[in-house]
Image 1 (cartoon, helix red, strand yellow):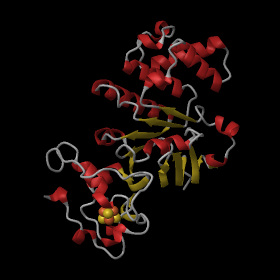
Image 2 (cartoon, rainbow, N blue to C red):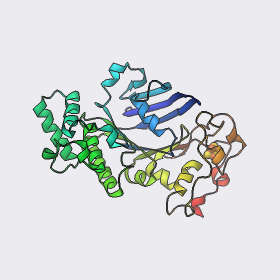
Image 3 (tube, helix red, strand yellow):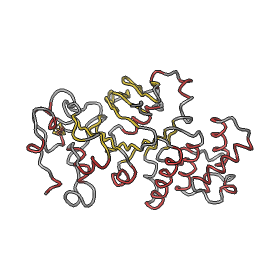
Image 4 (cartoon, rainbow, N blue to C red):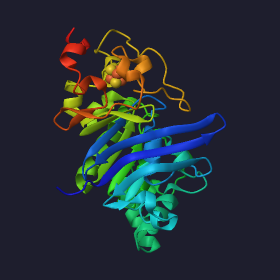
Length: 335
Ligand code: SF4
C-alpha cells in the first residue's frame, strides 16, 4: 500500500505559559489519504487546532514548540525541515483556512491584489495572467461577478463571501492538502452548507486531501470519510465515519454523540469540565468524567489503542484483553 498523503505520528506540541507547560497535543497520531476528508473533532481545548497548526509549524515560536513525533507529508518529515524548506510546503502543497475570514484578509488591499499576490507566489505567471487566474478562482468559489468584484476591498464583502475569498487564496497554490479549521463556524447555516458543498466539489475536482476541524458532529456526518476524536491533547478514537457513528466505542465519543439532538436524553451534556492542560489527570484523560471508569483507568498512561471494528480503534481499557465491552459497557443507545 502506498504511504498516506499526511501521516502524523505521536505528535507532541507544548506551550510554556505562566501557569506551567501546556501539553496541547500529547502523542496524537492520524492520517489523511489523497482525496479523503478527515474530520478532527472534540471540545474546545482538545488540541485539534494546535494539531493542525503543528503540521506546517504555524504555532507561535516564542512560547510553543513541537517536542516529539513526526509529521510526514508525501514521505517527508516536516518537523525536520528548515524554516526556508518548509515555505515550499506552506500555501503551496498544504494550505490553511481558519475560522475568522476577517483575520486572514488585509483590509488595505483589494481582494484581487491578495489573490493575485498568492497566485504569483506559487506560480510563475505575469501579473495579467495571475489576475485572470484570480478571477477564475473567485468565480470558482462562488463570488458573483468576480471580474468586477476583484477590485473591491474586503470590507464590502459579507462574512460568507469573505470566507469564499479566503478559500480562493488557499486554493491559489493548488494544494494537495487543505487544512480547514472551523471554516464555517462563524457563518449562518445556509452559507455553511454552500461552503461545505463547494469544498466537496473542489476536492472532487482536484483530488485534494482535506483535514477539517470542527466541534459540529452534524458537519462531520455530512462531509467526513474518517473521523479522529480528540480529548485533552490525546486521540481517543479513530475510524470510518459510518462505523464510528453506528458503533461509537469510546465513552467520550458516545458522550459527544449523546449531546446531539435526537440522541441520548434531551439536552444531554457531558458532566464535568475538560482537565487543566498544565496538570492533566493520570491514566485515561477522560476518567474524571467517564461513567464507566474503573480502577485501571486512573493510573499510568492513556490506554493503548485497541481495534474495535474495521478501520476503527479506541484508546480505552474496556477494549483491552482483560475486559469484554459488551458485558462491562452498557449501551445507552440501545435503551
Ligand atoms: Fe472511561 Fe476508562 Fe475507557 Fe477512559 S479508559 S474512557 S475512563 S472506561
